[in-house]
Length: 451
Ligand SMILES: [Zn+2]
Image 1 (tube, rainbow, N blue to C red):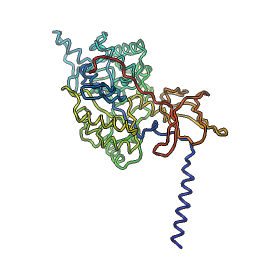
Image 2: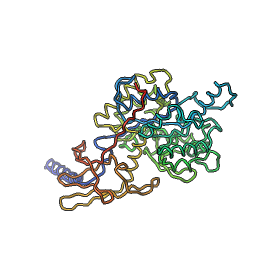
Image 3: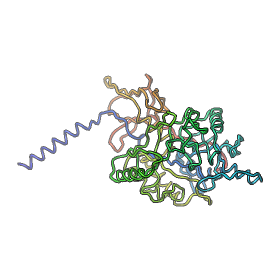
Image 4: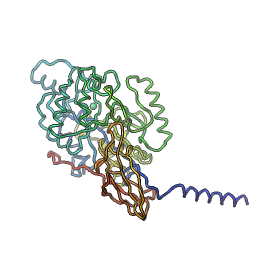
C-alpha cells in the first residue's frame, strides 16, 4: 500500500512540474539560435611588426582561402589596432643618425603596426589596409592610441586621431588598455592610469568616449571558464582564489561575480561597460601569447565553455611570435577545434565588439507580448541602460535576438509599431521552437597581399 502511495505521489509531482514548465511561454533565448555559448578571441596587436604577418594570421582566421596554414577558417575573429608607435618612431630616427632620448618601455621592443607612421601625421604605407578592416568590422578594438613611453603620449595626438576617425566616418566601440605604467593614457582607477583624469595633461576621455567607445578593458583577467554561465563549483573556487589574489593587488578594484560586463564610472564621471578577459584555466601559462594558446583555450576549455553555457572573451597576443610561420601547429589545432564547434552549431564565434553588443542589448532589452485570437505579437519597446541611455533599437542592434514561441500561433515581431522580419527556427536542445532576428556576419574586404 505504501508503495502505491509513493507512485501516485511521484505521478502527481511530475504532472505538477510539467504544468509549471510552461512550454507555451514566450521567453528570450540566452544565445542566438542555435548556439549554446559564445566566444571571441580578443588579441592585442603588440608584436605584430609587419602588415604581411598580420594579414597571414587574419587570412587564416577570417577567410576560406588557402593560406600558409592551410584552408582558412572563415570565422569572424577581430583584432586591435594602434594609431601610433613611439618606440618605432625612436628606432627610425636612431637609424637615421638623429640623437634621440632614451625612453623607457617595459617588456620587449615592439615595432607593431600603426595607422600613422611612428608618431608623425603621415599615414603608414599600409594604413589603407587597416582602415578597410576597421570599416569591415575586423579591427574592432582600439588598443589605446598607441605604444608610448613616459611623456610620449599627448592630448594633441588623441585630438588628431579623433578628427581622423570622424573624417573617415569610422567608429570603434571597444577600448583596451595597453602597456606598462609608462603608457600614461590608460583608462581606469590605478593611480598611473591618467587618460580619464581631468587634472592631467594626458586627459583624453572627453574626446575619446564621445567617438562611440562603450566598452573598456581596464585589465581584469579571469581563470573562470564561461562568464554568466551556469553554476559551477570549479568557477566558484576560482572566484574565491581571484578575490584573495586581489587583496594583495591594491592598484585596481575588480568585481568577482563572474559576470562578463559591469557598468563602470570613469574618473571624469562618464560611464562605460567594462569587461573581463579569460587568460587560462588554472594560473599556468599566465602570459597571454600565441605559443600558449593550446593550453589556455584548447578543446577541453572550449568544451567546458559550451557545457557551461557561458560567454568568453579570450585574452591573447596572436602576433607575439617573431619567427615565421608565426603560428604554431598547436595554435592552428586549437583554432580548428573552435571552428569545428562553431560548425556543429554549438559555439557562436564572433568579434569582441559584436559579442559585447549582443550581451548588453540582450541584457537590457525591454519587450512584451500581446495575444489576439490566433495571433501572437512580440513587441520590442527599447534598449535602456546607464551607458547607452534609452533608445528604440533597429535590426542591427537586435541581431541574433531569439524568442522561444508557442507552436500553432501566427507570430508578429514588432519594433516601434512596425513589423520586423525574422527567421523561424526548428526545435533546439530545449525542445522549443523559436524566431530570430538574423545575425549579421562580416565580409572580409579585398586588401590584397593574402596568400
Ligand atoms: Zn598591448
